Image (cartoon, rainbow, N blue to C red; front, side, top):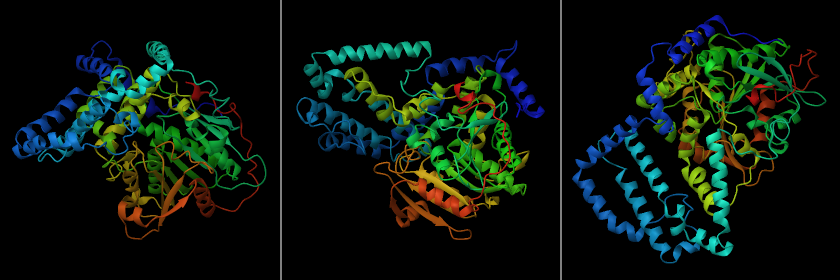
Length: 569
């Protein structure tokens, strides 16, 4: 099938935002100034941080009892300080020897004092207090004694053992990384080339428009389920997170179970795509894919969305329910939020000041770059994603071997200006989807209209979509929902193929009309099972679909082999 052009309304929006972004002959000085600052602050708004700090500081100054408590804690904590939850930086016995024990104790005392100072300050806006707490932790993590040669006994022992060779290797690693940084390239992952080592499940591009390629994967032989699966990945990521190596490819696993799978591969937008809106992502994404699939003779489709793709799939499902479109058979959401009232620490970066700052930044370039987004995600887990790597790469002279997940994670995408602004304002700031105010085709959609069964997966250590936030889907819908909580993080918990070591999950089914139970009660009562959640999901799909049958006779026209062309943008 040939390329499908944008609709006239979409083109109009694109031209309008394009004019605004280019500024023509009347440049917006504020936008240019904010953009310049944003490049120095990784996209963070200094005004937002200053407002939070001022709120905390003024209330602390006006709280003599809290001040007295902190003075009393200062001496006590130096003696009794212990690491905060899951902090493994000082587990090595070498930290118990002098003088390193003093370095450790002093740091932990400061850490716990600041934890107390940025908690339970009466009168402070809770979001401001959490922001100050978060920034305090970032600053303390930056000056941790584990980060420096002179105060890290493990690095000093390695230096003695290797006669300084680790520092030489670390310097080489730093130079290599610096060269990649200034050249705008990324460190290659040998053995992880797209289409050769990852994203290798055989398939064909069967549809293409200005925003997506639709890739079709089919079982190799035998009968198959009559309902295909449409996968809507997040546009912040390349689609092959779900088709990494053959042993952990969810796409391959589904094909092996007799499912025909269709995968959306999003185009990586550039400045010319600044005007793409959320409506365009609905129209040119899931809707266009659904129209193609049902045009091949499939009466019903299972739709699955991952992360932001799950939010978009839910919006699409709600619009279909509103319009009495009955082509949807079931809805599966993986680590996806539909209620943004409790988004976790990521919400600390989303307020009016921050969004306005990002809009100015995007207005000068037409999109939000991958690096500008990645900074916020790295700060959510700075110990694991920043400082531990600095120690390993530059002080110990080691290199973390690139695996398939790391290679994919480095292959990030951009976010078009209009869409990202609408996403932040309508979903994060206003929470319109949860409140029934989000509009598709100029009419509101309601999650309560969705009547197809839903399979909702969350992960225990998700720092992007906290599981309690994901769980709020059950509060907003009135249909059958199977909620599953697996161990692992946002990506690792989803990539949980059968045979993956140390995996478990909890599951409980809520039938339509049953009363709501809160997240903690659900956690306490849900049955825990060992192993991967994949077979449980496939079993659920079996129940919601028809019996195995011969393949449909529709002849697809291939526009190229998987993984297609857009994945290389």
